[in-house]
Structure formats: structure tokens, C-alpha cells
Length: 188
Image (tube, rainbow, N blue to C red; front, side, top):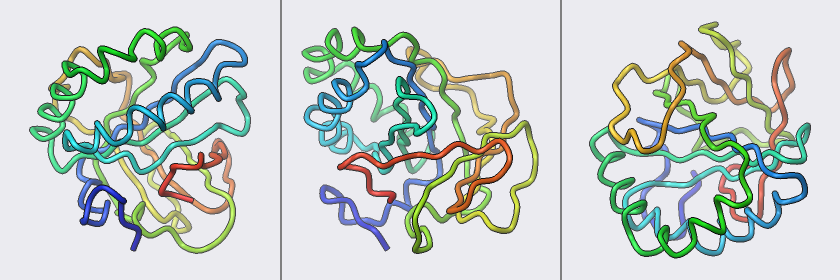
């Protein structure tokens, strides 16, 4: 099982509520955001109670940054987001981060159907599929569906045009896209 360097608990404990965040960035600025993000935002969010276990480049889109943030509950999500986004680190670096972005509102709030992000099977390649409410195939190692609870931190919008099913696999499937882990991603 994979463990965070800043948390003694396996991140499967953080699969209760998951945000799948897909940012569209200004052309050529993805690496700039990833460097800032990994240097300034990972530890403070984890200290606040979030767990950032997946940080990725989208292989098909050179201007997209995809990341996964997990929480133990909706209440803990609200508390963690309030602590981070109303705190000093975000206030200091938000302008630099926001300047790289065209859109940061493509966010799915999810709950698990099948846990498994903490221990993906060995192999190369990581593919995610987002589907309108379809059941996941047997080959997936983690599967989620839209979390039906209200967004408890409305300052960060989440998509409400679902429901969606989201699953992770080592193999490509129709409609999937490949994620390439950054240096700080725990999911590889």
C-alpha cells in the first residue's frame, strides 16, 4: 500500500470523497503551474486535511493539468478547503497560479464504488474514463460515481451536469484518456 510522506495513513482512507480536477491552462504554462503546485501547495493542503495523491499531465492535451484530491468526509473536505483557501499560502501564491489557468471549474466530486487508488496493480500506463452513469468494466482498479451531496465549499464550483461514473485502469478503453504522473504523484 502506498503512503503519503506527510500522512501515516494509507490514502485509501481518503477515497471517501474525491475531487477529480481538470485545469485548462494557457498554452505552454502547464510545467510552470506544476512546479508551483508541487513546491507550494501539496504540503499545506495535506496539513489542512486533504490528501493529494494524483498529480498528472494529460498525454492527449499539452495544456491540461489533472489532479486528484481526497478527503475522509464531506465535513472534513469543507474544513480542509476553508483552512487552505483562506490561509496564507494560497493568498501568497493564488495570483501566480491563476495566471496560468484558462479554466479551473472542470471538477467532479466523487464517491467510491470500488476503492483501489491506494494500490493500483503493477504495470505501465494509467487511464481514466469519465462516463455518463455507466457501470465500470471488470478491468478497472478503482471506480467512482458522482457524490450526490451538496458542494460544501461553493467558492470552488463542481460540475452538476452528471451523474458521472469515473474509473481508473492500466489499459485504454473507449473514451479513456491517459494520465502521466508528475514527480510528486503517488499514483504511478
